[in-house]
Length: 148
Image 1 (cartoon, one colour):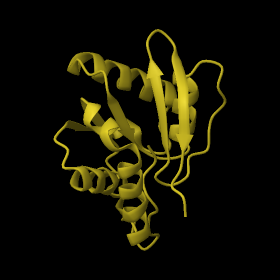
Image 2 (image 1 turned 30 degrees about the horizontal axis):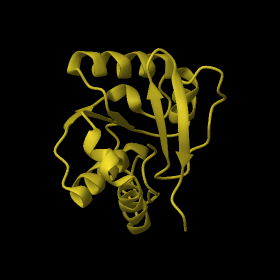
Image 3 (image 1 turned 180 degrees about the vertical axis):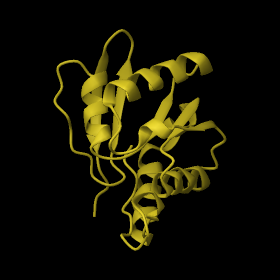
Image 4 (image 1 turned 90 degrees about the horizontal axis):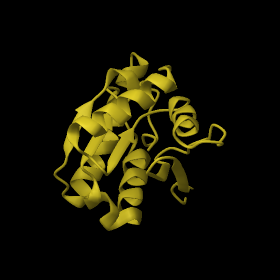
């Protein structure tokens, strides 16, 4: 999942907060996927404020209680192969079957291409979610953004 719409009114990129619209987008996506969120075992979140706030909005909207880890490697300029390896290792260590990653472009587009064989890097709208299933090889089920 890409973070919700963020303000540019911050001293540094990592400190950019969500806008009201960004919060609303995130809550809308939470409601769209409804019960699917309750199948999460692990949430991996970028340390950037806007990603943290995106997860907090979803968590509060749905009353979720799930293990959350902040990974420094989920920032925009991170290596997608490293992010993939950390995602898979974190899921394995936690025994997690349902994992949500809340991060940024361009990382998410390239991470999706790393996880889904034969796919090209995708563009994620703010609060956009790619729902994938992974057994041996990942299959893209849906790439969706909020409706405006």
